[in-house]
Length: 159
Length: 104
Image 1 (tube, rainbow over the protein chains, first blue to last red):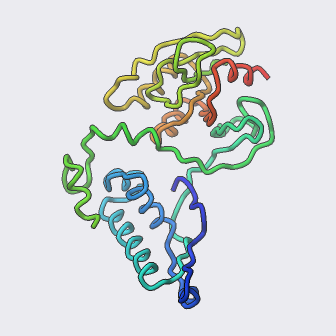
Image 2 (image 1 turned 135 degrees about the horizontal axis):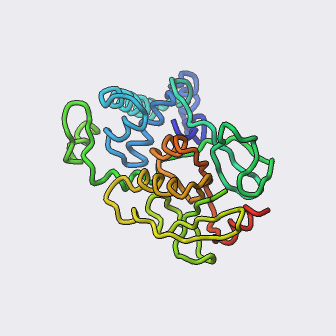
Image 3 (image 1 turned 180 degrees about the vertical axis):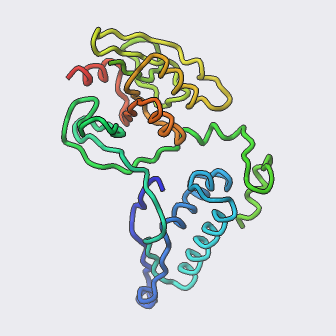
């Protein structure tokens, strides 16, 4: 997992909103990540599975579960809480509060900003894969059962 | 110690290139001699694998730190293997401003 969700959940509002707050739906963090990779960052499923380090069928299962839960929350007007699940953040990144740079800490070094030498630092959850999106476009990605040459094929399961 | 900074042009006043693997130039700054050398990135137009190839490229200059706008997700493990620290600059700074920060 590369970044934490911006909020920890969503509440319904309107006339019948109160009812939905009682039996909330719990969206697991891996489900949030699966949805984000596919629908927000528009990645194909093979790629998303690789990023999450799970097999393609497992990814699809997590992703479908995410959609099912969100749809249920929408239709039944229930509260959605994002928490739990088996996730690992990309660790070891720090933000310098003085020069605003991000850096990964090397094991041998003491914790100090490599640019401005400041010690005013905080841990940071850094999203590491923006660049790769454009690079993968021309590649054939192995997706378990077959080679997906056609991007459209990957999206067939989406709907 | 040498530091690689991704650059849009080959001058000290040019702005940092936000992409690591496909940057136009690498500014190799030596903190001891205070000299900056500009080298063209041979992987700028590569179809694939520009990131990993660029890691190898800057490692051949024996740099210990790499400064860029962002790094791809394959890069971290490769950088750890060759012991290069990654520094991400989120603002549009010039090469000179970064060199000044390094000399602070």
